[in-house]
Every structure is written in C-alpha cells, then in structure tokens.
Length: 65
Image 1 (cartoon, rainbow, N blue to C red):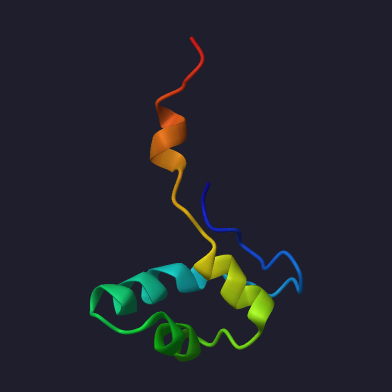
Image 2: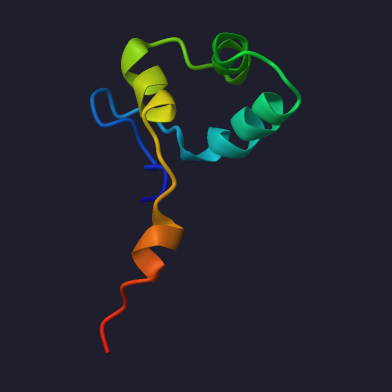
C-alpha cells in the first residue's frame, strides 16, 4: 500500500527516498536517471520503487463498519 521503509531483499532503508524520486519523475526525468540520482544502485531496491503502486486510496473505500 505505502512504500516500505526498507528493501525486502537487502534491508537498505529506502522509504525516505520516495519524495525526491517522485519529484524527479514529475520534472520529466527518466526513471533510470531518477533512481541513479537518489542513490538506488541495487536491482532489488530499484524493484521496490518500480513495482510500487499506490493503493491506499482504493483500500480506503472498503472500510469495515
């Protein structure tokens, strides 16, 4: 739902990099350059960002009650 704090495979902290990554994408930078700029070198950490889908809004529609 929300970006994990750490990479699932290697344990590197990645959650704090999401804002800068999204800002770079909004400016029109390619995903590869944005990932390089924020310091994500390992393929496992890159996969966390490239595979992330924001589902918090969709999950919020189905509240128990």
